Image 1 (cartoon, rainbow, N blue to C red):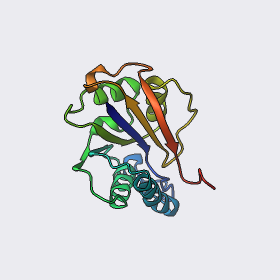
Image 2 (image 1 turned 30 degrees about the horizontal axis):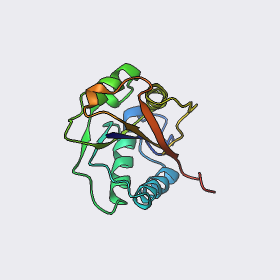
Image 3 (image 1 turned 120 degrees about the horizontal axis):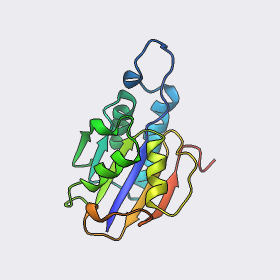
Image 4 (image 1 turned 135 degrees about the vertical axis):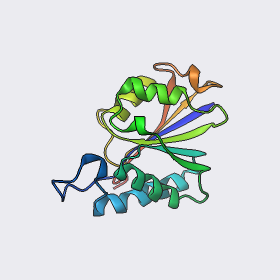
Amino acid sequence: MKYLTLLRHAKSSWKDPGCDDFDRSLNKRGRQDAPLIGGRLAMLGEVPEVIISSPARRARNTADLVAAALPCQPLAIRYEPRIYEAVLGTLIEIVNQLDDDWQNVMLVGHNPGLTDLVNAFAPCKIDNIVTCGLVKLAFRVDSWRDIQFNGGRLLFYEYPGAEE
């Protein structure tokens, strides 16, 4: 089995209109939501072996805050430039190229790519993964290369405020 957790970055700041999109930081709500989602992962007993994040500042900050809230740290947080502004085909390539030694991987990225990826990999219909939304998929494969369209099963979709 392979498990893929997709996390959309937490809410980002639009305070500085001159700031480049890549360099936008998290706003107050984003800084609160990311540890909350990390805590939810911990409660579910879900700790990814590795986190692969977009290098955009808001995604990096989200990955760091989520990882810090976990009971044990992932092996690594790695940054993959192709995740930033990635379309579905690029995200599929990234997933198919993951190291087969990893069984449980988290990708931290952006919409619309992450929502498109969930809907391509699992027979579900999520209109929009909200900021700091977390989706976990399971695949009955031994290799990430063998993941196919609709080949996954949705295990959960969590987001801040989901239990309110």
